[in-house]
Length: 290
Image (tube, rainbow, N blue to C red; front, top):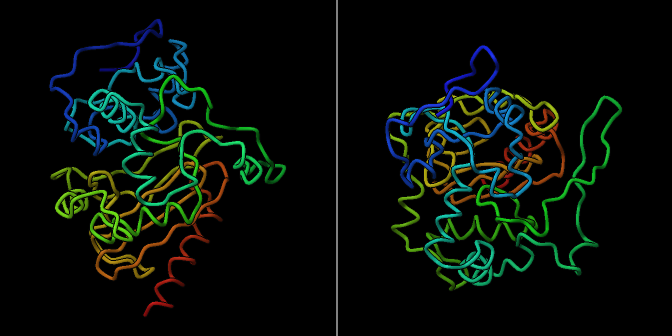
């Protein structure tokens, strides 16, 4: 566990006091973090020369914790480690396992870690909001990675991801294809972090993300953000949601049986204009559904 830095700037490390469980990984209560929202981890990467997670190299996962497992919440690379667990149990790469057990049964034909030749012409490039305006970038997830990220890196379409959201609304089934047992979806959809609560994420890498303040007091399931109170947009208490770094957002409302997916290719994360438009979109959906 990282406990800061000594006078010479070297990391101060100690063993964690508790072991990491799969539940810790899935609820972001393991102590693993992303450097972009943790200044100490950003400094650790700089001091040690460790690569960032976007490199998709195994060395990017060789990081210390920042708190003892089960004692706090902080968004991080726990899901990437959960993906490693799937590979260890199945004997398959994460991409192959997901394709066989989720994407193919659900008809998510455009979803995967690698971009097919026939997809590249339809690929929306990631853009960045800069002082000079919104500019296109060449940022792309490595196409020959050492590991496929459980926490990100899939390419997809809005319609594909909406099929995933509809499957969750359907209790694990969509169009006669069942990929999860209904009790499993129920387990995934409830608070899985006990008395812990999510907290705001402060940016340590401004080019990648702004400060993220909507999380304070929220709960986490396996592995969804859960709002314990209704939201002004019309979203019911107990709904499921999360986001992608390039300002992509979704929600799943099991009470009103409504789901929505909104996607951009824009950095940094939590862009004020993108978030405002997402809120307007969500409110309009609820206005239309009554």
